[in-house]
View 1 (cartoon, rainbow over the protein chains, first blue to last red):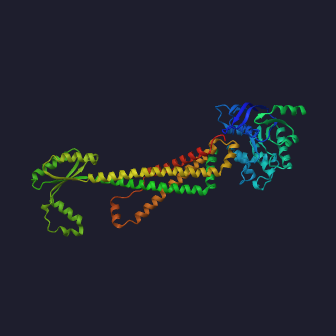
View 2 (cartoon, rainbow over the protein chains, first blue to last red):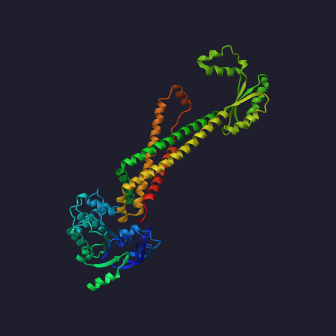
Length: 227
Length: 300
């Protein structure tokens, strides 16, 4: 599903965000990318959905070598995954269903198919009956669930989430993590970037530790030993 | 595919609706710029038509020496008819010339009382073949006429036509220089307005990218927006120009109205209108292309 070999990312300001990162995430895995601020976890997620190009190394996502020189289908890569952000990235002036259907409208789905899928996905995230509500009338947790619904509407095999519970209280975090767990159980690969150790302890899954832009293998070994 | 195209057009209209004020301002500015450009085109077009009409009517008047015997006039008339470039020749006797002057003076023909016909010189009115009704053709015929010693003076209106043609040429040049500057300003305005509207929709465009919209899905509505701005702007300019011309023709002073009856003032022909509208659309497209190049980079 995801393969990174010897990936480096140096920004024009000479800041080295990632240094010799190699990792593999298999189909159906639930993986945390954990690290403190400036550990390179957001850069890693951005590389996975093609928003950043690595300076060096090879990245293969969903069978697409996105670092190949001839690769110019970032939009197709993004259609093969769902992305969830800390700040939800919703259109505040639209309703729940308009926000979710937007993801299919931009890839020219027929209206009938869109409506059918919106209802299905709203049920998955527990927001049935809220389709016509404006976004501003929703709580932060509900907004994040709308963002997840949008990420899921295309039924992607991979879901990337960058600090999805950062702005949520414990109860809302539970709701969101439960959705992720359900999806993972049904086969969706989930990669969740977080700095929150507590979250990882409460919902244990595989963890890739990042420290100063490198994969911290020592930490991984320690955790395995603890287990 | 049909659905995709419909979706792109719909999105362009929604974008315009969502940013109505900047779009209307742009259309207004395009309309004013195109109106200035089209006005020059209209003036140049009518002056050129006027020159063509004038050239159609151009003829040579060759005045004979008074002492030329009538038998010689007959021979000269036949020789002139045979000259290269001559369509027809008419002899105008001094009596015909006086009658013509009287007819021209109308109610004031009494002014000619006391003038004897014999003081007017006899002349040949020479009509040229169509292909000789130009500067070079006329000069060729005149040089042949000058070889006959019986002619005292040869007159033709070409010098005036040449001066007038030079003026029209200057007008055309001004039109293109001024037009060029206006076109640059239009591209700048269109590109800036679209940058503003793109900036206002930055969040939406970011989400479109995240969910996998293709570059064409993001860019094409912006190009359509530019095309529509150009179309509406140029269309309005043509409409205003037509109305302006109609209003001006209605309020022309009567002496000029008499003159326009002889030399009709036309509106721009359909092919020129089409060129102006297409030009406006191309400018709109170019402006939107610059805007999208500046703001929308693939992959971000």
